[in-house]
Amino acid sequence: MTLELGLDPDAMFTLEFPDMTFSVPKGVEAFRERLHAAFPEERKAVDAFLTTVGDLAAGVDAIPDRLALRQLPDTVWHTRGLVRHARSTLGGYLDTLHPSPRLRAVLCWLNGTCALPPSRLSLITYARVVSGYLQGSYYPCGGGSAITQELARVIREHGGEVELGTEVSSILVNDGAVRGVRVRPASLDVAPEPARDILAPVVVSAMDIKRTFLDLLPASAVSPTLLRRVRGYEMALPLFVVYLVLDRDLRAEGHPNTTTMLFEGDDLEAMYADAAAGETLPGVGASVIYASLADPDNPRLCRPGQTNLQLMTVDTARHDVWGAFPGGGRTRRYEARTQQLRDRLVSLADRDIPGIAASIAFETTATPIAEERYMRCSGGTSYGIAATPRQSMLGRPGPKTPISGLFLAGASTRTAHGLVGTLNGGVAAAAAVTGVPVAELLATTSRAAASVHPVA
Image 1 (cartoon, rainbow, N blue to C red):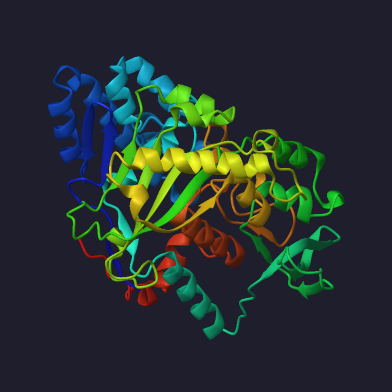
Image 2: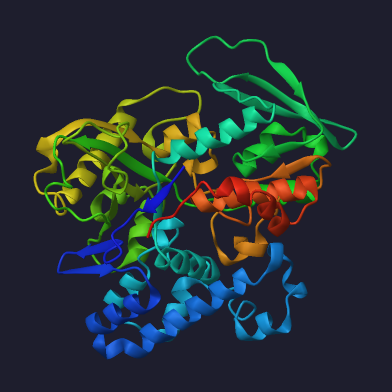
């Protein structure tokens, strides 16, 4: 598997406001220079923001295998600001810098990757996200399926099996220790077949954390304290996505390989409040992600001369808003809301791709209700528990659990969500299962990793 630079280094992200366009380049200093040029009267706020973001990200990187805060060296405690900003939100920190509304919106350009408003988003988490993206955005050639196929190949080569179309209906526990899992076919459209047990001394759950503890495990296996903690987890907002194939070659038209973010104003707090309440239609913003521009040689994305892209926004999973309820089918209200949101996003995307509606060759949508039904995601979110200060970093569960033999990976653990986060979560779980430190574990796999060649 190979990697290529997935986004234009000069414009990894393009922020389109009704009266302004701002491009985010690769590199902290390039970003700083562009911010200085766009906001010359606010250089002090820009520099303070970038310094704090860099210090916090470096502080997190200095934590070996995610130790507890009390175990950190004094230099990390005092020079990197982790303790000082442990309870800080992005919005609260920006309040201290007094930026203009537009600069504030620009500096918050990546908060959508956590699906939280700035006033709720952990500053430390956001610092890690910003620092990571400013180092460059890479894309796996062949798409995300190339990673899963490689993982499946390694599993099979080492004597393992990969079962598709199968879901775990319960985790088997006896005398406080895991004994395996009970599985059944995952199809919702056929009569259920008898469940069967797969016995094993170790189970790693990478699925929704609430489902793991509240649905899969027997209640007697989970302490009342842990049950209360899991029930109290706040989930990130879910996403509404429109997947499109256009009968247009945007690459040939000269469209940059960028992620476009469409803003209708500077007030992100209002947008998220509307989304949480199920009122996204009046003031929704959106991201446009061009899959076939990032991976132009992938024939599975679209035919030659076409473009594969996604339109994405935050939304609500409230069943009353959608008119859909567990165990029920599609309703008129569900269909109408899906169509309204779809039309709104396509209309917004016309600002970036004039004439987009007339060139759609294929489309489908993913709603929070569908995510909840098919992926068993609590609250319809694929992002796991919300990255609030209380649920950020060391406030999130690690790979070990109080139940012997049960380990965690996935979006709600300390390594967080997203492709890199969940892959790192798998490594952390493997280290916890084997008792081998992460660094040593990665060193033993360096020969296999040598087949991955990032190209700048």
